[in-house]
Structure formats: structure tokens, C-alpha cells
Image (cartoon, rainbow, N blue to C red; front, side, top):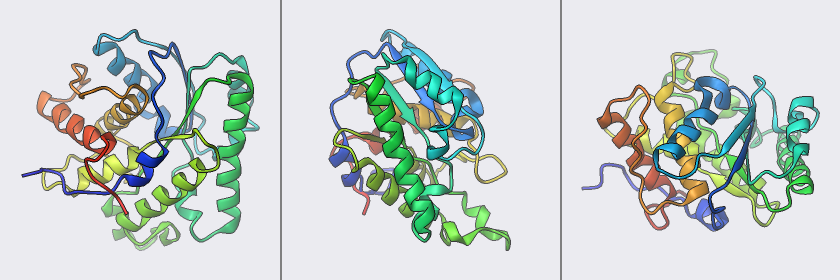
Length: 260
């Protein structure tokens, strides 16, 4: 029996494009969901452990920044304008895509930020693959707090559905945007009866296992390996790492499952 209940990733798969062969320079632009646990280094360690040449990886991760705000951040602008990037990974603020469902202002800023960053990157790195790193919903415990912000949704499923919808919409603005379905992989994990906790106690930020799963999904999205059998596992047990590798494989494999 399949350990992970079927979900739909048709929208992601429709947006996916062939991976860049052996990228040598990868840039991450995000905030704390990228910076916590040093996701760029986890990604690089995953690549290196496969025997593939480990790319140069650079990052800028100021806390809480919206996608659009990176277009005014000197560090992000400087890195983008270096050019010669093979891959650039973009991560939006954790609530902006969910809030986009109800707020036209937030929606416009989110979509404008994604398109603006894509255009800036392509102007300096015309052949770069630009990857949207889809974020995840708050942990179910978040909604036990009467002060929880229900503008992002009333439960993890609703919040993730909004995130998925608006990341797909942002990607559809340009013909070769790619989505790394990290949030969908987190949702797959939590639908398993043997789920690992991926959030820290704030019910928002990633524990190491959450960042590891994000790194696996981003690796699979960029490299399109035939299988995920990664020797690097950081401080995880082999069983934990294997479980997360299976989740990442299911979230990124054509025809494995679908999300409405």
C-alpha cells in the first residue's frame, strides 16, 4: 500500500521544464525559510553526496522580505546583476501567497514581485532557470491559538491550497518559470500516519528535517534524477532521511499523484 495518500501535482507538472544540466552557479533569494538551517548549504551537500559536481551556491536571506521587496534590496540586486547564474531560486514571504486570495493589494505585489525578479534575473543571466520555491502552510497547532491569523486560511489544507494557487499563477506569468513544490511535499508528509514534524515550535519555521525536505525537492526540481537515493542526511537517522526522500520523490515525479 502506498504510504502517502495521493495528491495532485498536475499544475506543477504542467509548469515544469527540463532541468539545467550540471549547473555550476546557483543563487537563492529568500528570507528566513531559506536562511534557517542554511538551506543553500543543505542543497549543496545533497548535490555533492550524489557524486555530481557541487555548484557554487550564493544566497541573500533577509528576514520577512516580500518578493517585491527584493527588487529594492541592494544585496539581492548586486547578486542578480553579477549575471552568469545557471539557476536562481526565489522564495516569497511565508504568508503573502496565502493572503493573496483575499487581498488584491497583496496579490498584485506578489505577482509583480515574481515577474519583476524573473525579468531582472533574465536580463543578466538569459539562460538561467528561475525557480519559485513554494512555501508551506502553518502547522495544524497554529489554528489552536485564538489569535491565529485566519486571513491566511482556516486550516493547513486551506492555507496550502492558496499558496499552491498563487505560486502557480505567478509562474504562469512567464513561459519557463519552474515551481519547486516544497509546500506540497510538506503537505504529503503531514498526510502520512507516520509524519515527521517539519515545523519548529513557532508552527511556521522549518526544523532541520523540514529544510532537508525542501532541499531534496529543490534538488529534484533542478536535476531531475531518475531516483532519490541521497547519502547526505545531516543529523537525521537513515530511516528519517529515507522517509523524506520518498516524500520528495512522490512530490516531484510525473504521474505519481495529483493535487486539485
